[in-house]
Amino acid sequence: MITIVVLHVIAEENRDLALGLISRNTEKAKQFPGFISRRILHSLDDPCCCYSVTSWRTQADIDRFRNRPDRPQLDVEGEERRIYERTPAGCILLFTRTRTETCEEAEQ
Image (cartoon, rainbow, N blue to C red; front, side):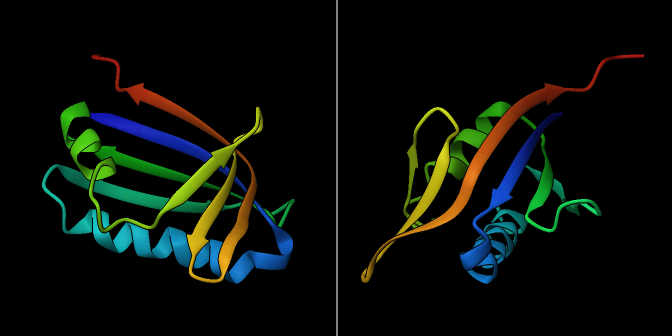
C-alpha cells in the first residue's frame, strides 16, 4: 500500500474553491481502481492549513489516476509549489504552498 500525505496551505481569498478542488478530486479517486481511502485533516491552529492522506494499492494505480484527462487542470509554480487551477476566466491561486510525501507502510 502506498500513502500520499500532502500539506495544503490554502489561499485564504479562494478557500471555498480550494476545498472544492480537494472534494472533487476525492470523489473522482473513490471511483478509481486501486483507491483505498482518503482523509482530510484540518488544522485547529491555522484555518488555512490542511492535510490530505490518501492510500492506494500501488504506485501504478496512483500514476494512472494522476494522468486522467478529466482531472482539474492545475499549474504548479515555484519552490513552495503554489497550485493554480486553470479556468476559462484565467488561473486561480488555490494553495500558496504544498508539500507532498509518498510513503509506504513498514512491515511489522
